[in-house]
Image 1 (cartoon, rainbow, N blue to C red):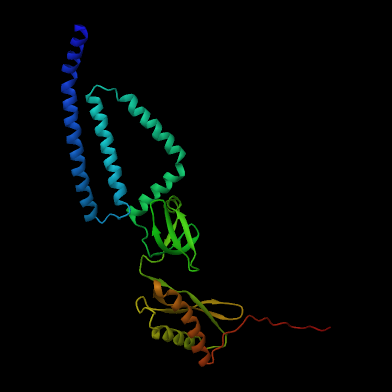
Image 2 (image 1 turned 90 degrees about the horizontal axis):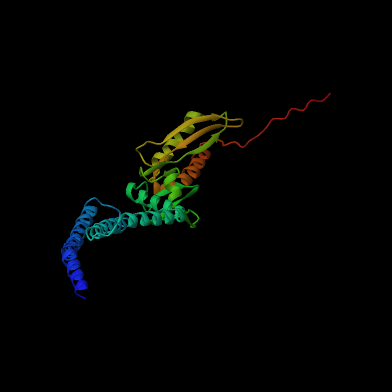
Length: 268
């Protein structure tokens, strides 16, 4: 009996200092992690890190630091941590392979929220879909098409593919083509179309609108009519310039020809 008591006392004397030190390190470490988390949150606020990404980065950082702290405490108690770390690594690899597509979308969402290639309200074209960005989540981005359809695009596909952001510069160029007959006065037609655009309230003066001959087609001289407009005014300007262009040319008796073909009959 005395032998067991002696062994118990010996174990207590041997491990008590380690236990006390490990507990002190654990409590101090948790306190330091909490302080670091608060400082990191304030840093994110100053750096204007996206509000959707902020909680994820904070939680990820805290869990990584806590895992490192617990492994350190276990090592202080004499627990072999090498196999423990190996098990965690193997489990992480298995989960990663099982959720490969999901993790790709997750990583894509993090990149989008960090580098901000687009934001909510921007007009974009991604993965063959055109629309306004309604919502950016960590896994997907929601687009609203001009037909008012909701399109859900995986963030992994967006981050690994090409993206067109029509809203980044704040304005767009409208490209219209209006054909006039070969016997029409080209100079007069250009002046009328240019004045029509300059008088339009939604056509930008800088960059200035442009009218130029783009093609000598089979039945017409084609003029490109290129005003610039704010993103929200794009369709109004496109439709108005076509309609008003037809109107001013009609008033000046400048015809807009339709395709035609001359047929010569030869009789033997």
